Image: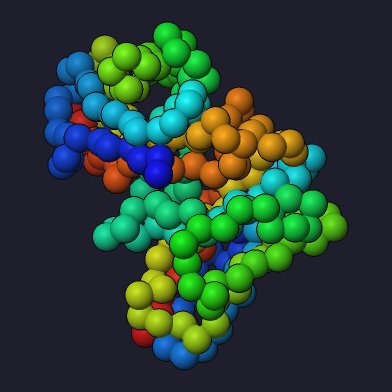
Length: 113
Length: 117
């Protein structure tokens, strides 16, 4: 079945550092790909999305490019702030019309001032 | 416009009891999905409702059930609660139509934190 794999473990970095979180997926066809962010005590917020190969999703300084050849959708931000501290989830929605999301395990990002 | 509203925010129940959680989607959204989030299993899909009909179902036992009303509001019920049912239950809504989530993504509520003791 469809699955999403995120890099293991939390990510700790200093303010203004470069952030990258790896995400790879397994799916048939052409899934849509998403990054969601979860702040403490909150639900999930859609951060960005891409619906076809080579699409680049971007929002609030975050970017991710849908790479079908490497089945990846890595999240990047050039200069993180303390307010970016949260848990980030990569997810996919398959091309079969099922209205469901498959999520990665999530990565805790901690930005130190 | 108002977001996805889940009530209650927190619940404490005893093993063996049953519980009902409520979700009001964004106005105009007709698809409502439920997810369970636990530290061990992460985010897992429970089921999706559209036009009062269950359209998709995840791999959960029959103790987990749901329904959707004509105004698109949805409830999920868990009977005979077990300690392992302690989790954050998230509701998400999207526009109608199969595959709409693929184009627009889901909008999530803040969740109901269920603790079973």
